[in-house]
Length: 88
Length: 88
DNA sequence: CGTGTAAGGAATTCTGACACG
DNA sequence: CGTGTAAGGAATTCTGACACG
Image 1 (cartoon, chains in turn red, cyan, green, orange):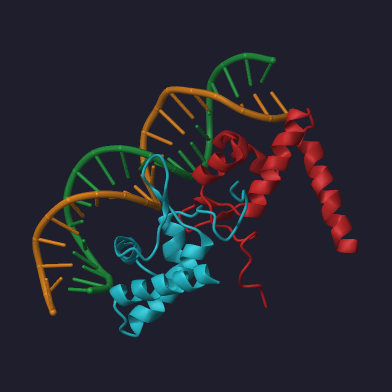
Image 2: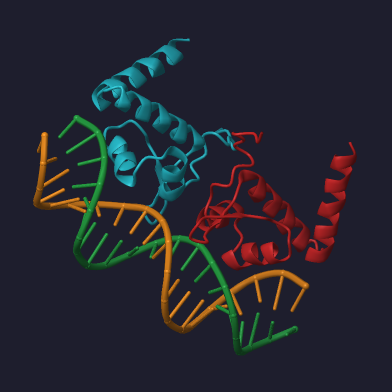
């Protein structure tokens, strides 16, 4: 059974809210999705929905990008972390 | 200083998400606002933003309405509860 | 009282592409 | 590589009003 309520993970925000909260452009947010760094949900009419968790990930990404890290590297890094969590 | 992060109280959702999560119509959600039962935030372009807390309040309201309680009574009830919390 | 609906405008979102590099 | 932008269509949101009652 799936957990019914998790404020942090629930995909509820639209693009506008995300750009407001992160300071990133729509273009940036969508690009990071194509790079498989974030995974917004989609409504029946194709609009994206983001979670608080996504917002936090985006802010991490923004920092790394500023440091000159490539999206490819950020993704590998995320994948590694996910693996570690699974091993635990 | 204001608390910077509270997933539950942060006003981040648009009307569409709210109607999806509560099952209410846009009309109902807006009406309950005119009755001072919920207080969404507004963006610079006038669109409403709701919090998880608002969603929960809306579901409470929906239940009461079904029981035949008047919005006026629901509001008085909410006001009483707020007062109690303050006294504590 | 509480809610549905049609109306018309404004703001939002989406995709694919050109651009720079 | 990462991001800006103009383009055009589709979906969303808003307000004020008429309707029923």
